[in-house]
Image 1 (tube, helix red, strand yellow):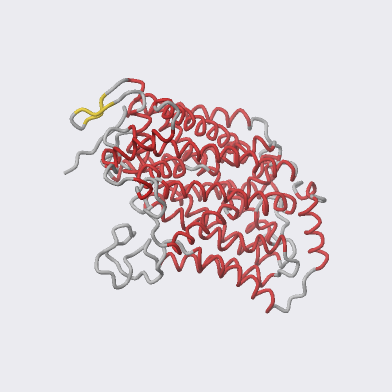
Image 2: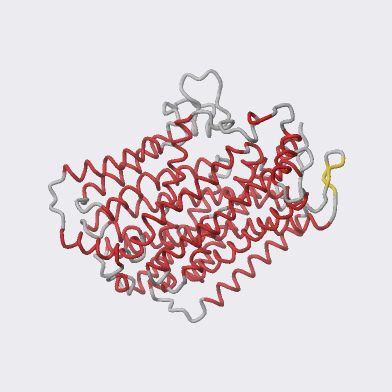
Length: 558
C-alpha cells in the first residue's frame, strides 16, 4: 500500500487559521460599527459606497475560490497546457462581463439580477424564476466549497475520517453565518478584499521564488518538470506541453469552454457585486481592476503548476501520494520551496517551509470563508428581496422586516450548506462547480442579454429561457459521464460520481454545448409565440437607463 505523506505541523496550521479568522472578524466588526442595521440597501450592497478599485479587489476575492488556487495549480502540474486552459477560460469570461453586462446591469438594477429581468415584463413570475435559478446555482456552488473545505482543512490539520470532515464543515458553515450576520455586504466585501490581497500576494511570492530558483527562466522550470515527470517523451508531443493530452474530444472541450466563458457573466454572486458601487463608471472600473488582478493571479498559477512538477521531489508521483492528490500541489510547493527534501519517503527540512505552508493553508481557508460568505448573502438577498418582498408582499414589505427575513435566511442557508457539504464530502467537487457554471450560462445569461438588448423580449420568453436552461442543464448532467458510467461501456468509469451505475446517455461531462443554445432559442421562441404586447415605455426607459445611467441613482435608494 502506498504511504500517505503528511505535510507541515497541524498545530502551526491551527494557529495560523485562528489568526486569519480573528483578524478578519475584527475588521468586519470595525468597518460595520454604527452601520444602519435596518437598511436593506446597506445589508445587500454595503450602501453602494465602494470605489471601483475596492470592488475590483472584492470581485477578485469573490471569484478566486480555493478551486482556482488549488485545482488549477494541480491541473497544470499534471496536465500542463490543458490545465492552463481553465485559467484562460476563467479570465476570458471577464471580457464578456465587462463588455456586455457590468455597466447596463448596474444602471438598471437595484439589488439582484431579478431586478433587471423583471424590469419590463410581468414582475412576479419572472422574479420567482430568477430567484429559483439564483438559489439553485448558489446552493450547488456553496456545497462544493463546503465539501472542498472539509477535505482540505481536515487534511492540513492532520485530521482524518468522516467525523473530522464533518466537524470542519460545521465550523466553516458557522463562521459564514457569523460573517454575514455581523457584517452584511459591507463586512463580506472587506473580507473578500483582504482575501484577494493575501491570495494574490501569496501566489506572487511563490511564483517569484520559483522563478528565482531557475534564474527567472520559465523555460528552465518547464524543462525540469518534463525531465522529472515525462522524460521519455520529447518535443511538442510531451503531455506537459501539448494541447489535447487531457481533453481529447473537441466537442467536449468546446462545451466546457462555453460554460467557463459564459457562466461567469451569469453567476449571481458575481453579478450582485456590481450593485456595491455608486455609479456605472465605478462598475466598469471594478471589472477592469478585477481583470488585471485575476489575470495576474492566473499567470502565477502557470509558474506554480510547472514549479510544483519541477521542485517537489519525485514530482507527480510524490504529489499523488499526498492527501488531496493534485489539489495538494500548491501547498506541497509552499512546503518544499524553502529547502525541504525527501528521505526514505518522508519529507524533512527546515522550519521555514512549515510556516510558509501554514500561511498558504491559512490563505486557502480565508479564500473559502470569503467565497461562502458571498454566496450566502447573494442567496439571502434573492429570497428576501425577490421572493418575500416583491412576490409575497407585492413590493410593499417594510425594509427593516425585509432585512430580518434576509438574516433569518442566512441562518437557514448556513444549516443547509452544512448539511449539503456533509452529504457531498465524498462527491466530485468539480462536478458541483461545473453544474453551477453550466446553469449560470444556460439559465441566467441568455435572459440577461435578451432583457438588456432586445426590446421585444417578454414574460414568456424570460420564463422559457430561465426554466428551459435550468432544467436542460440539470437533466443533461444527471445523464452524463460525470454522474455514471456510459451505457454499454465495458468497464466502470472511475471518474464518475457513481461508477457502478450505468445510465449516462449524454456523451459530455458539461451540458453547455446543448443547454446554452437551447436557452437562447427558447427565449426567442417563447417571445415570438407570445401574444403579450411589449411595454414600449418600459423598454425605452430600460434602454436609456442601461446605456446612459439616467435614473440609476434613484434605483438604489430605498
